[in-house]
Amino acid sequence: MFKRLLSVVLIFGLVGCSANTEGAGNGANVLEVGFNVQPETLDPHLSNTSATNDIARHIFEHLVAFDENNEVAPLLAESYEEAEDGKSITFHLRKGVKFHNGKEMTADDVVASMERWRSLSGKAIAFLSDSEFVKEDEYTVVLKMDKPMTIAKYIVAMSMTFAAIMPDEVIEESKEGTTVNEFIGTGPFEFVEWKQDQHVKLVKFEDYQSPSGETSGLVGKREALVDELTFHFVQDPSTRTAGIQSGEYDIAMSVPNDNVEQLKKDPNVKVNVETIGSLGFLTSIFNKKKGLFAEQKARQAVNLAVNKEDVMLSAYSGEDFFILNHGLVPETSKNWYSDAGIEEYNDYDPERAKQLLQEVGYNGEPIRIIATRDYEDHYNSGIVLQEQLQKIGMNVELEVYDWPTLLEKRTDENAYDIYMMSFLNPTDPTQIQYLDSRYNFPGWTDHPVFDELLDELAAAPTQEEAKEIFDAIQAESWEYLPIIKYGEYIRGQAMRKNISNFRFFHSPIFWNVEKE
Image 1: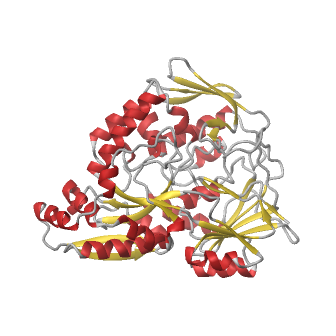
Image 2 (image 1 turned 90 degrees about the horizontal axis):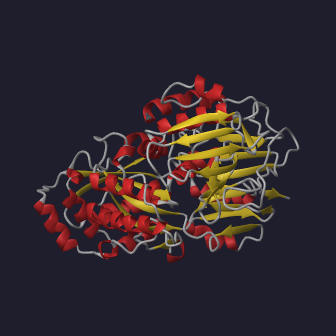
């Protein structure tokens, strides 16, 4: 899918696709963002990467989304109701919501969008493959499920590979498994152009209809307070740092931790590190389909050989920028956080690692780690992993690619043994993509125990029972080891002093941001 996707993106990205092709014009209030990586697409149904979702969430919107407490609340839906038998959810749509092409959103658009998303999103495929979104009337859509699923609303609200609502005619024109031809949503900003390796430009949608209520997480009041929002692709971190100091950029994403103290001393710049908290977590993902790490003992050997604090220090430069945490969800997720697996996380025993390698018959074959410098933490942690595996006698090669190439490489079972990857923190266990074999997530977990436990969790009648099941899932994860989680990261985002109301929730949010 990624190969087909990339070819289409390269074609459309050269010219841009939108009803609006002019931009905001001279004298416009433009928010310039130094963005660290170019996305592979702006179609959120097709991508589970933050690079896509960080931009696309300003163009497209969900039926429901998460508030600041990670509870599900209406967005394009005015309200929703769950059936007592747990087998359906009824969504009542807001009236008068306009797409960027001027058309009013109705149930036909929602059904077309949700059915496309349901067929493409790994999480929806895993849990909603035998379900269906149906139109009840012009402003009512019902999700009908074949079995009770108390966690279904969380799946519909998820922030990655999110269920973006698009016009039904755009859905009909798209070919199966490829990106849509036009990026038309209902969001506060509309798409103008994408110049490959340069920028994505969005402009304020003048007819935007904001949801009501106070802003909370991803719901409540949204307003485009600048005329234009431009994401400049600036892969070099030192260039982003220089750009925020010179005023070329209003906001710089993922500034190097080494530069944070320097930026704090600049009277024209402010950096949000202390207030932002844990954003996500750093991992190594094993190729479990082919090669040495199809063997569980070989994966356990790597876990024993690696000092996780050393990896995090190398990736994030200092203790202020990471948290050592074994949990598959962050400690702030009170409903789900678990102590299961903490002993395996803390276990560091290189001699035992050598013994396990002997038991699986490892004899010096090359082990390939792939990483990207588009995310410096991926690359730096890959270097430490290489060094620590070499110390236990492994023949390790580190191959470095740009971000789109790495995304393509990770889908090829013959291209690598381990790849470095970071994830945003999940809001619930079903968002942990690398656990469920039905996702076919690169790395290819194939462990029926996970599938059975996740199904039980999805249908658990109470939160307490669901939490007990998740404890078992996390314990099994540290035994089976589909990945190694090293810890959670805190990334500094820098902005000019004249920028206000910029915030993070799962990803950066540029609506409600003011530029004086």
